[in-house]
Image (cartoon, rainbow, N blue to C red; front, side):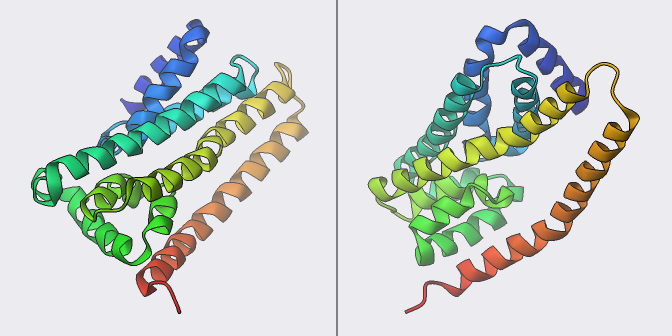
Length: 217
C-alpha cells in the first residue's frame, strides 16, 4: 500500500512540476513536525522528489529551498506548541510509541541543549520528539532556532541527495544501457547499502553514548 501511495505521488509530481516546491515544503514540514513524521512516509516521498531532480525533471533550487523551510517550520511549530501547552499536556497526548524516545530526549536536552537539537534532526527516534523536548525543558527560542535552522540546511540536501543520485545514474544509463554499466551501478549501490546498514547502528550508538555522558569539563 505504501509503495502504491508513493508511486501515485511520483506520477502527480511528474504531471504537476510547478507544484513540486510547495509539495516538498508540506512533506518536509510533516517530516519535522512532532509525532506526525511517524505515520507519514515523508522520507520515501523526498527520495522520489530527489530522483526527479536527478533526471532534470525538476529544478533543484526551489525544491531544496522548500525542503529547508519546511523542515525549519515543522520543528519550530512543534517547539512553540510544546511551550504553549506545557510538559504535562505533552506527555498525556503522546502516543505510547513516542514516550520512551521523548523521555530520553528530555534527559539529553537537559545535558546538551543546543547540540541535542542539532543532532536530533538526524536520528529517526529523536526527530519525532525533538521540538517537544526542547519546548518543555524551557530551551531559549534563540538557541533552539539557531540549531533548528542550521540542522535543516544540512538535513534537506542529505534527504534529497540519494534520490537525486539514483535519478542521475538512471539518466546516464539511458534507455538502452550497457549491461556492464548496469552491473557496476548495482554493485556500487549494494556495497553502499550494506556499508550503511553496518555503520548506522554504530553511529547511532556512538552518538547516544556521547550525548548521555554529557559535556565534559
